[in-house]
Length: 346
Image (cartoon, rainbow, N blue to C red):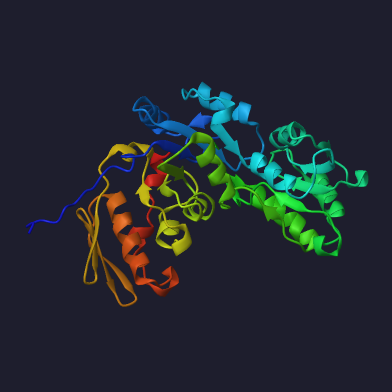
């Protein structure tokens, strides 16, 4: 019997044949690369792993995304990029045959995919569209949202046309900060018409299944910065995931993560893909991750020992998750809500 408990296990990257990564908040924020992202993914590729990218951002084409990644130092082909407009058009094909007129709310990334699939794109509800497909683009404004509302006035169950949203991300990280995402724009149309869109991208599983099939993955690992889309979607698709604290979700979100959106790994940045991942141990009421330990004492979350910032977050998250109780049932010390990773990510 061992005298000392093992503190680390394999690195998250060990045994992985395909790395699937989100883009905004994982590889770049705005035009610029996030520190350590390009170098880490380059290392993964140099060690023989395939790189693929899954994005809910519908504003750009796969070719534009590939060119952006290549300019950052990650040589990428359009076929390496799986976009939410691609997922939306596949879903549209199950409802409306090619050749039909589709009202597009969004930018080039959406229009190109619709036209590639053989649909006629319109911007006006007066053209009697057979469906509305909505995706994010910075130029989307009141006029496009109003046209969607006019076209969707009749509920689908009463003979109205389908409404497909590429994604419903509430926010999108930009170089200047966090901005409203497609979810806010979809919500505006929903408020006007009182009906819900069918969502094609993350956190729905089909976009992940498409990526796994395209890249021939046997043991993929998905990298994301959002629990409610990236991690929830990967879990729904049965894929291991790592949340990286360089984008949207912060320590407070990790601690409060519901069971359906908890990552396999918690990383401060992508360099930790290659570091032995710490083993989480539970002994009575104390959860330990290397030198960090957290105790659950009734309604209180207590720090027993801090260790490193990332290990303390890991210990606290696993301690809370193991109780099966929701975060608002605890008194959580402010130290656990601190965000030392926020300033380091830019």
